Image (cartoon, rainbow, N blue to C red; front, side, top):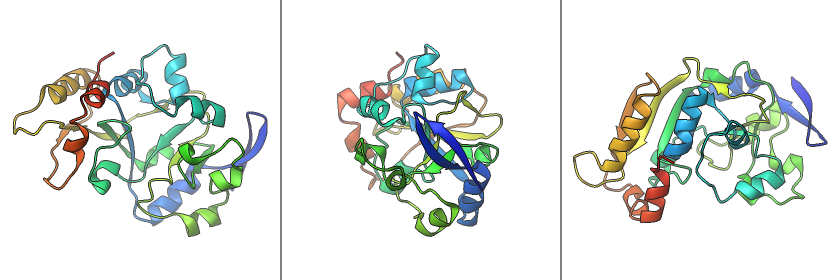
Amino acid sequence: MLEYGNIQGHYETTMKGSEVYKMLMSKGIGHLYHANSLTTSISQLKLRGLASRKLVEDSGLPQTYQYTDSTDKQLGVWGDIFLDTVDIHKRASRLNYYGPILFILDIGIIQCVDNVLITKSNPSKWGLHTSFEDRYFTTYEELVSGWEYGNFDQMLTIRNPATPLKFDGYLDQILIDEPGTANDPSKEFSLALSAISCLTNTPLSRRQCPQWCKCKEGYTNTHRLAQMYSLC
């Protein structure tokens, strides 16, 4: 069943969360993933739920700049919440460019949500004139036949929510990247652990990758490291 909404002057079709939930569960997907910088993750925890970049900004809380911010505003997705159906860091054996803090959420969090869609490609690949049909799966049947497990372009989006998507027991785990190479926790990991642990009772884990993972190479970029683990 489809719902209709007027988003930025355009009449669009969106699915109910229960429809997307049904499809993903049929594919064996039990969790959704949301990665961010330490600063942005702290803001989300203070809001007690996932929030779009627009909602974080409107709440007066800090968030780390993303290179797609200006384009996202032009494309009308600045107010959307994005979720992945896989742990990109683990599956791609590299760092997740959105950030080292991974929220792992029970898929039930979307069951009662309206205005849900899954993208056909990453919005960074869209143009201003990319049609709605080329941006998203627009029917349940199309979604079932076209969705591919592990396709990073196919992101679940909650369109323009007015409030954060509350964790309310759905946040199962927070996984924090270990950017260092020593056995002992790095100062970056320790900083993140300390900052997050005082904001939530959610289990926290240290991601320690096998040697073939390329994430350590990514964290040799000192600018990226400072940006991803900054507290401001």
